[in-house]
Amino acid sequence: MLIDAQQAFSKTSDDGSSEAVIHGAQKGDQAAFAQLYREHHKRVYALCLRLLADKDYAEDVTQEVFVQLWHKIAQFKGQSKFTTWLHSVTSNIAISYLRQHKNWLQKVVSIEGAGMDESSVALCKGLNGLDKLIVRLPERARMVFVLHAIEGYRHEEIAAMLGMAIGSSKSQYHRARQLLMEWYDNE
Image 1 (cartoon, rainbow, N blue to C red):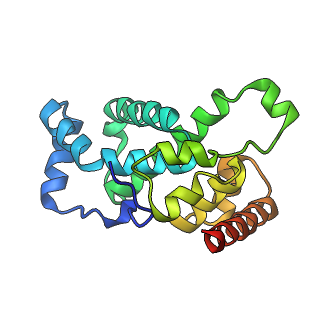
Image 2 (tube, helix red, strand yellow):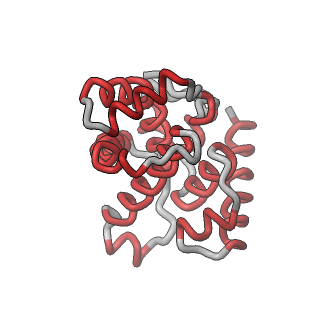
């Protein structure tokens, strides 16, 4: 599966046929839900991998997103694009998953968990370009960078999502940019 940093939720069109598929899935049509999965699973996985920097976690969370989507799709009212709503659900589930599966001792000893090391990145054959560097970022810097630079959240929204101060969000974003530029220059 090829993952590209340019792949974003907003690039999927929500035309009339998608509305029919969404409506069908809301009524419990499994074929319509399968169609939603086929259309969106790669983007959901890409966002999860960028946020979690762990292939196994990203796969688990992608699966959890679609389980939750099956249960919550009736909550989608069409006031925004479906992809925007799915993106929000995915981000929230990924962040929640990360909080739940964090080792307590790791939280105490090191607030800044590192991302993937270079050998782990090399094993992820689907990663390319900027994604290879993003998954190496420390956890908080990576999450802020992905949410702000790639997914378009404002620092106020990120701060609320991650339980940090707005200034911390900006600081982590700056840190991520600096590390990415340094790594990019050294490649």
